[in-house]
Image (cartoon, rainbow, N blue to C red; front, side, top):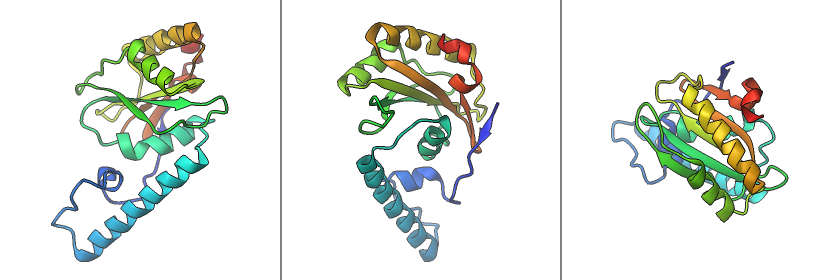
Length: 182
């Protein structure tokens, strides 16, 4: 089942989340000021969220958090969210791998290296589909099974694997394909 996230802004999310990206010269003064205010609000919310230690107890929260970062990427990226025993984010999302337009090469070794360095009790992995369709491929399901199995050996739970599409669409493998986690 596909889920929709409605972005709150007319700006490209990458312009908001990346303060190093230059403000486009074609924007009017008013729009440039609005973009700067959005950047400041986003940076403030990140600091607040880190202080509050965001709790990711459902996939909607994860999708809402990751959508501005991942929805408009032109190639696949995989991120890991290391969590403590209360499902609160430890630090910030960590990029595991950058792939091509049709896949990302991220194995359990790299994923769990990051989880162990963060002293995570559990993790959530997420990647994007540049095509916009968040439906999982056979490879996505295989990676989920592999990471679940490796996590059992290390006593680190894979809580979910989200796929971020475009236009507000996302997919939770745990919610829709629970058998993959067995």
